[in-house]
Image 1: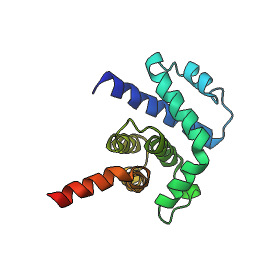
Image 2: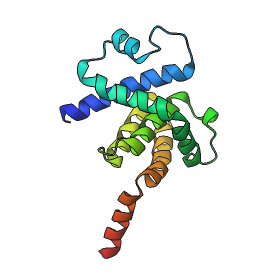
Image 3: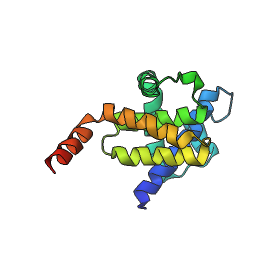
Image 4: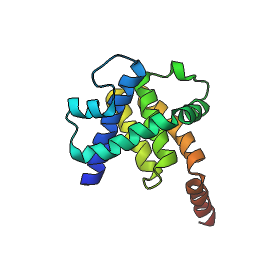
Length: 152
């Protein structure tokens, strides 16, 4: 694993903690990104991507939540576990707004977070929802793969 990918993984993990805490709506001395960074002594290398994720999810949460609810067939947001929802929000933001990262990497990282922090069924749930979101957010990737397969 490169230092860049390790930094991103730790940034995602920190963002998960921050966004989960925000969703719980608890009064905490770590309720702002700067206070969270300071309290948990988030290293310099992790801060830029952490900030990108947190501000991106917060700025686009309405549209992200609509995409998640549409992709999570027969699931309303309030029924999705808070950890799973935070993971889905992070990955959905990345799928739509961080085009420099492959959709496979984004989904793989989200599934790993779900395995580490979610319930027994979280990884498969997160994988299924994000697969549908990836098809919508990056249709060109799937069209290219389909054309490649049909040409073989």
